[in-house]
Structure formats: C-alpha cells, structure tokens
Amino acid sequence: MRELEQKFAERGYSRRDFVKVAGALSLSGVLVACGDVRPQTQQGKQAGNTNSIYSIRDADGLQWPKTAVPEPTSPVQLSVSHAWDATFMARQQQFDQLFTKRHPNITINAENTPWNNYLQKYLAQAAGGTLPDIMYTHYSWIQQFITQGIPLSLNTYIAKQPDFNMADFTKPSMGFYKQKGQLYAVAYDCGPVVLFYNKDLFDKAGMKYPDASWTLDTLKQAAIKLTSGDSHNRIYGLASLPTPASANIAPPFLFPFGARYVNEDQTKSLIDQPEAIEAMQWWMEIQLKHNAAPGLAEQQAMQQQQTDEFTAGRAAMAYNGSWITPGLRQNASFKWDIAPCPKGPKAQSTSAEGSGYLISKSGQHNDAAWIYLNEYLSSVGQQFMWGMTGRGSPARSSAWDSYLKSSFAPSGAKNILDALNNYGSNEVLYLPATPKVVNAAQPIWDRVVNGQLGVADGLKQVKQQIDPLLAQNAGLR
Image (cartoon, rainbow, N blue to C red):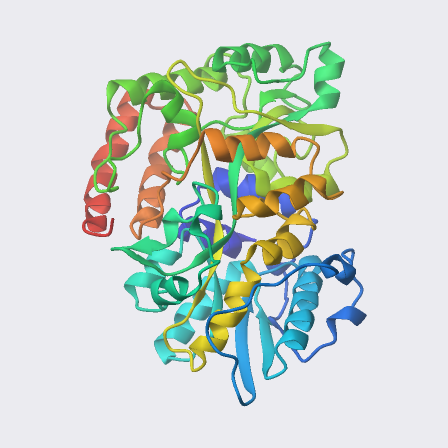
C-alpha cells in the first residue's frame, strides 16, 4: 500500500487524494493491486464465456462506425494495454470478442496491468522500444508521454474520419491530450468533482439534503451542524479540505472565490494572492475553528485502515470525483447521493478530469490500431463500455443517455452531467512539473493543518517552493 501511495504522489495526487480513492475503491477490485497480483494477458479468449455482471447482449442493435482507413488484408495482432480491475476486465474481453468478429484479420492481445504498476512498467518498456500498439493513459501522464515521444499524433487519422465528431466530446475532456496543436490521445471518460452526502446522517440531524440552492456558506453551516461526538467516535460535517498539495485544488475550491492556483500556462503560482489567501482561510476555518473536518492525525489514522471518513460513515459530506461511485455503491453501508457543487461568492465551479487511450509511435500496425481506437472510443463504443456499465462519466456527450439509464449509475448522475456541461473545468495541474509541485507543497501544508503555521504564511512558502518547479513547464501549452 505504501508503494501505491508513492505512485499517487508521482502522478500529482496528495496523500489526502490517496486516502479518498483508497477508501472508496479498496474493496471494489482496483486496490487488489496492493497485493501480489501479476499483470494479466488476455489473448484469443472467448469473452462471452466469462462470468460478468455485464451482459454482452448490451451490444445488440448498436451501429458501429466504419473506419476510414482500409482493413488489413493479412492477419494482424494488436497489443492493447489496460489498467482495469478484474470486474471491468470482463467487459473489456466482451468488447474485444465483438471487435474481432467484425474484423477477422485483427486479433487482440490485451495486457491488463494494476494501475499502481502501470506507469513504471510502460516507461521502462518505452526505454526499450517495446510498447503496445494501443495504451491507456491517465490525464496526468500524457504530457510526460508526449515529451518522451511515446504517442503518435492522431490529427491525420481524425481528419480522415468524417464522423469522428470532435464536438461530441464534453467540454473539459480533451484538453489534457494536446500539445502544440497536435492531439495525442482520445478521452474515454471525464468526471467532475461533486458533492457526495450521507443521507442517513442528514436524516438523523433532521436536515434537508443539499440541492441546487446551496451556497458555500450553506455548506459551511451544514458541516458545523452535522459535526458531533468526541475524538473516538466523531462524525465530521465534511470529510476533507482543499490543499495546495493537490493537482485539482483550483476549480472546486479557489475559482468560486475568484482565486487561482497558477497562471494559464502553469509556469507561475498565484496562491499567495489576496483572493487565494481569503479562499483558503475560509476553507480552513471549517477545521481549525470549528473542528468540522478531520485534522492530519485523523486522516492518517483512517489511512492506516485503508478507508476515508466518508466511506466509513464518519463524515456527512465529501467533495470527490464521480469515478468513486462504483466503489461507494459496493462498499458504503449507508444511503448516499450526489448533489451539485455549492455556489461561491464569485462562481460555481468544479474540476473535471479523466483518462484516454493513445497509439504508440513505435507500433507496427498503426492503421489497424486506429480501426480499434476509433470503434472503442466512438459513441457506441463509449455506450457499451462506460455508459451501460455505469463505470464512469463518458467523454462523449452522445453516450450519456445510456449512462443515465443504466441500473449501475448513481441516482444523482444528472448532477454529474450538469457539472460537466455548465461549470466543470479542466484547469488542473497536469503538465510534467506537477508531481514535484505536489511533493514540495505537502510538508508545508501539513504544518498549516496542524496549526503550526498560519494559512497566509503557508501559502507564501508554498509559492516560494513551487515557482522554480512550475517554470519547467514553459513552452508546453
């Protein structure tokens, strides 16, 4: 588990982010990778015969797109790397079985690697020139991949594909994968940070659930009122607070106050500006003044239990990504739902981020790889993979109807779509300097959380430490 936390830090996540994700997903299969789990290879396997909670018959009636490049005239084997949990890998096998029936000259060798091992494994393979034809990429990795020359630019293929329809992608989903006018990956999902709430705790307190009328002041008042109990069985109003040691702090926590973390090209910090200081002081009052959010010691204690306050039923509300819903559905022992993000004094805003797939430049079968990628990330591909399964927020707007109708989707799924369409932002840290920025800010902010350093002084120290690191991003946007 320590190795996994280190990998999160390398990718721009804070320790708090790690705790939230670990708590939500540890029992759902994603964090089984903490144990001795070897990468899986699925080659020529009849996916329809695997046990799965998803039906392959979901594909009945779907009209798959015709790819502009010609079919291979002789047998081709494509290697495709994924980072799925075991439950979802069965759906992947179903897709591959259907794909090879439509394209008999293409066979698929699907490599499934635990997420915490993925980046290290494929960076090592890149050094040896032995990458798969098609690769999964997290939004926080792609710029590093681009600078190392790993992905193929997709501009030419997309230009040849008249029905690819770039306008179909949700507004925040594709910005991570571009550099200097070239697109190097295609998003399959993009999810916003939204407000989760524990319905049981709200009911017990006799309080109305969060709704679209809420402001941040409403949130703070509710968090204070919902907090109860002593240190051993305390219930917190809010599970966690923003930290500059997080890649996605700005849209949900700073933008509502008219503040920013960095400038537009992510080369200079603005965290010491008056608006940012005001915003962070407002948030930190919830813990430092009202003790309505857990401190560092409480978070570390929950981390040792591989959970977080919200998943454990010890917090009434939590800001978290829409991608945690499968884990909550499986693990939470209480009723929960999703509400819109409350409006701030200046704006309503939240972050949105996700993942995608690329074609590696070193691959031997680029045309066949595009045939696969085009179908996989088409509207019907996203319906089959990510809409009908309730897995995550589809990157294509046209796939959302299948998601909202899925029995696997959360009841508040429409609030996720509303956030994406109306106030979601991809202005998070994602350029190559991000891991260094997060690591530099973490120990400084720990002192603020512990009451050893004031908020304003802490932010000024963060700026001093991260500005030279951010300068390394020059010329990448």
